[in-house]
Length: 149
Image (cartoon, rainbow, N blue to C red; front, side):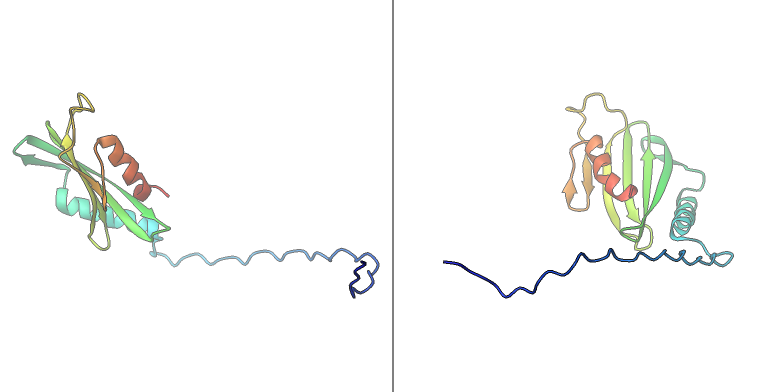
């Protein structure tokens, strides 16, 4: 048996498409003076929160003097400014991850300041959103998703 189809006869070779030169991208205007980009706004808001709550970064606690420090990061994919507060005394270490705009606590670590043995030095509290962690190292891995792009 022989099959045939009603395909049209092949034309001569087609000429390659003509490539037009791309026009240069339009020049974006510069932001108006005094207008900050989201990363700069995040830095400014985080600094204001830290100075309001911790002034010079020290406070007294039951464990003795406490040092406070912070980091901020504008996560472009989430369109969110994150603020990581670290509080350290002679015996304990606390870290808290906040959404600056919403004030929501995303995660918290509360454990010993000095880790002598990873097996014996379990944190009292270690979570980021709905995920729980068993060490400072696990905390850092979980927080990295918020503090880096």
